[in-house]
Image (cartoon, rainbow, N blue to C red; front, side, top):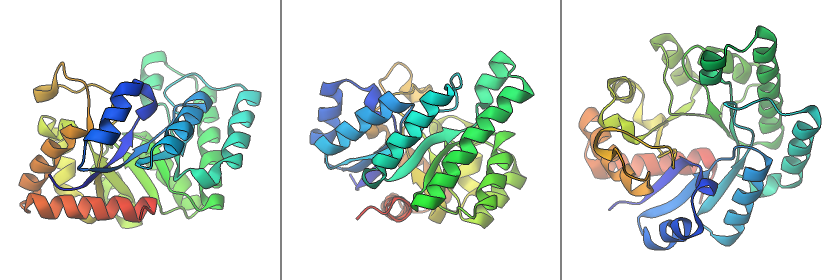
Length: 258
């Protein structure tokens, strides 16, 4: 199997034995970009990165959860500043699309999430870090506005879904997207894979998030990326080995991995 990097995984949400198994037994796995959910998650990902060379941590606050208190958020930002040299990106950060749909957040609350994201983007620019984003559908153009405002081009839209106009904008700005295992059964993701330049794509699992189709009932695992690459190669009509190589080079370039 060709070398791969999982560009977006929540490694801290796996058990210790699962993590060691991935790191030690998956010889094709060159690295894992593990994104964080909050301060506790960031702290655990830092510990994992210090233990395993393959683990590359990103620190941030996932938007699909209640807003942090002012002190809680300040503590997170101060902690990130203290350990910025040990992280490869700011993430996972973004806007609460699904939470907003489910709970009907007020415009004021939505504005507060936007304020948090703007602070993260400002720090990513200041620290010279890429940003790993949760920004889908209607939220994606808003996030593009912020990225353009701060001239931050090193942006990774994970598991992206959106309209063609936004996709063209993202391509023009040089932003990256990553493909999940649902490329095997989701027409929306297959269409995105067909239209987005391979030179701006990566591969991910978003594990341990579960998938359907041939993966239904299975624990999400970096090994699933091989099937994603196979499907992507079929869509692009390019040999699998070439697709794997390009995805690997893209991820190394964006996240500055040697």
